[in-house]
Image (cartoon, rainbow, N blue to C red; front, side, top):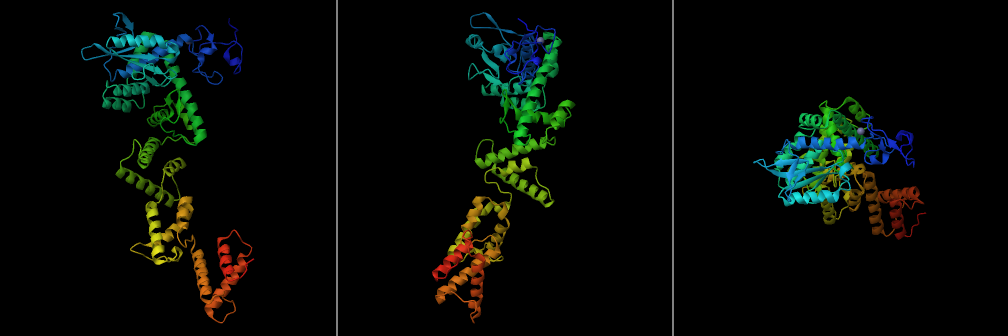
Length: 496
Ligand SMILES: [Zn+2]
């Protein structure tokens, strides 16, 4: 039954029976909308691809992948069958042969459209081929799980052929079928695009017909739109266009990898102008970014060094990187600039990071100041600017700690405030010192000094006490008021 209603006329969630017309070739029979589960946007905004075109699409993906793999593997281009254990031939997708031309490895491409629900049949066929001594690797498109956890791998949904091929080669390295160096070289070479495009195009034209090239372009267009939409969402949430590896995947396709590829294409003028325009419309999109991407990677490796996890920079490299980062920022700040905020945050969020190399020894210095106070019985606040102790320039340290107050986190502030007599400002020091003097004088005379005394010292302390009493009366939230009140109370003097 056809209602004659096209999907565009329907709202989301409509119960109305809907049939779609194939966008790729409108002459194809129309088809029920339910089939478009994987590509449809919220309102079925994805290209409406009929079952016939999808079958072609799967073959197109397979041929693109096969051409890419042929740059590394010895692939028998024309072989479509191998003998199974029962002597019968089995039709297969991709056959790699050994140096004598004998089939050794069978790669089956399982596109999600045609292999969902064919699990048992696919598994039985693989078992029959394995029994005949062949290595069988099923390349399963995302949404399909691996049938055999050792031999099978899952690639992204409608992944770019070169990305899929790089993943397949990595997987074959794990199975001992491909050299690590060969897989790495392929990944590097294919970063910005496929390596065997011309051959793939010829195969598609020869075997599937000219119209199949249109299907191929459409696959590419859909993937691009899907990843672009994901980047727009990511940027809106995170404020930058630098997802980390595997942070966001769309149908198994890594957004970070896709973004790097777009940057590389932009840098080499290889991106379609309309696409370049759509990217540059994203607020924080930056094209000066081959460098940015490398910065991200370095930053991640430095972080790994700090956390002692995989992929870490070697210690000397890490020190050099951190020093360069600090020097660069200092130079910028001196010129009234700063790092872009995403860069600043990427670095500042590294555990234990400090922008000031002087701060590297922060805790060591705090410990020395603790020792100073314990051994000399002096307050840290009484240290003068030029003072040295045990060969340490403690006066310079105290001064520099104070100047950096605004940049310290709660932990660092607490460490300094725990030092005997610590004060953030020199004025506070003077106050502390005078209170100590008052306390000593009172202890010696067993009373408080008077503001009108004949003795100059007593008069000075008496005036100071009177002024502070009136200035701080009624204050309970003020540390100085609390301390002065407590001292006065020892001599039965009341401070309101
Ligand atoms: Zn069609």
